[in-house]
Length: 520
Image (cartoon, rainbow, N blue to C red):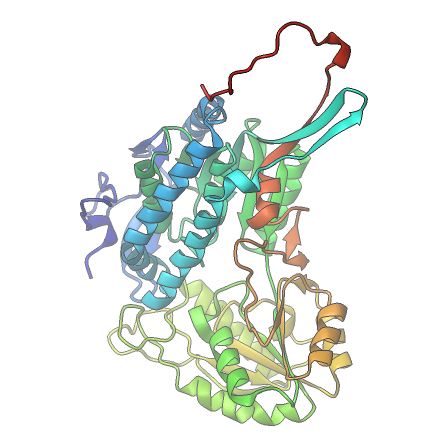
């Protein structure tokens, strides 16, 4: 497969930059509308997770380069905020069209750098595209409020105005979708944005930035820096940056929330999860098993909404052998291979961690029903592959349950009643998502009302809301008070200005105009 950095297309050109001492390409920064080669001396090697072959090197931007991005964003904000909402809307229309045209190229980049299958990578792009399409409704989403004659001759009304420079820090597991949760909403609301994509797979974000430029985003409105902790600290500390959006691990998410908030910034931080699927004996068996297997093992389990824990209520535990048999049929392979159901994990260290957590479960008394740690993929023996794995009879104090595994591992627990299942979920510190499988409306309603989780699926395994709603993870899965995309996304990227005006009726004098007003 040709390196994504070598692809040349009439509408999508991924800039090739000067190599270091070898023939390996490097990734550029994007500052003030230009792809800029970093002058840094610190680089991060980026590997294909299916082969562990070196693909490129990602710069850790220098302080001067990051400052240049901030200055560019601040300068561009002064003019971008004055652009009409309808003009920003037109940019989003063009961007969504360009993303549709380039979906397969974006997916190819994701598969090469992140490892997920091409079908899954296209889904990554399309779920992000839905947010762009929703951003096209900004002329309705950003409406203010008005109350006429709040007092005699007095009116009060509100505007939603942009904040200024915003920043987005994204994870490795959704290289297209998560950036598209952030910068389109920030920009369409009138802000400028600095993105810091994951250094493990920045290619898709760089392509999206190029498409945004092609769609008409002015120079400086969208900038990209790369790096690790120094870049995160920059985003948290720089006085120009007013708001930070983050998706990723607990450790980094808490750090960004605390440091950014201490510096007076608005922060939304989506973090870890332990999502439970509760199966009642009356559930539709075929539907439930199919949905559970896909939600547990799809994307190699590397998604914050993976259904990684199943709670069998009563006799539903008798379904476990069939779930194991269905999981055995999933094909583990390199993401571009026909029929591949799941690809590799992102890195050797990720694979090692997953395998160690599986072993800890065995050591603590869990029953290993299916072991994918020794899976071999012909032609890709050096890849970071782990096959579907199932641990049964797991207890709440086991490490394989208390930690987010982030791999293709399903842990199974048994309880006697729905009340017990709800208690297990509510005692877990996370609150990203959960699901119940049942044909009982009463049981489903009891579950949705009593479970303390932000997103609930009823016969839906991964209840990620469409963009007209917001992504509402809660408790230990989220820091902040305003969520991603939807109405809350607009609220996060804007501030309310309230105007109270007084025009006394007795001051009216002179001739009244009779000509219909026109826009000028």
